[in-house]
Image (cartoon, rainbow, N blue to C red):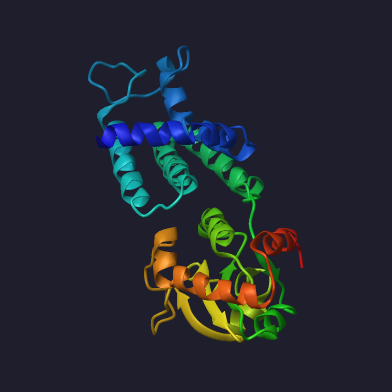
Length: 290
């Protein structure tokens, strides 16, 4: 049954996977992921490679290479247990495959290892993961507008994501947050984002660290009347984030979005908004660069 469910899920996401693979970032990542396999199996090339196999067949994996590949599979499976989106699953596969390839190439030939490592460095410096550009009802704040917007109307509840463009976790979370904004946005419940990688003053004021060691990115903060009511992930005394999974189910439950949404719909009626009219306005605001 689990196998059938996995196959059905893969087929459902197949058009989306094709769109990803056509982007330069994913094409380059895929080619780098299979690099060692191609080199080890390529006729005319593999015959000249070193091998620890007893039969001397240099066109097949030796026992040490198989161990490394099996260890890679175990690591990817462990990491993907906490992955939320398909992008995160694929990203984990690509990242750890590159690490394994570095080890395999250095073990095979130090010159190939240096070449592959150089390609990895160039790839990291020149290729960035595609940024989510789908529909959303989200207001983007700057350091000059965030306080004013949060305090403008005390009846409005804001859920604000503090993020940084360089954070892969923030990039993976972007479609989840956008989907929540499409489902729950209304006059009394608004969604916002602020890039604290760009606005360091906002990071300091709201005490959200951008340090990779703190693991506070992304952070979701709930505001009413400009006052913070809660945040996820929570932060311990050492300034490190308490482990928390950023999936839609957890956010709806922890932030009590269903109850907030029903309360906020009353504000819609009191302000004379129709749901479609308000969402039409928000659609234009959501893509505004402030």
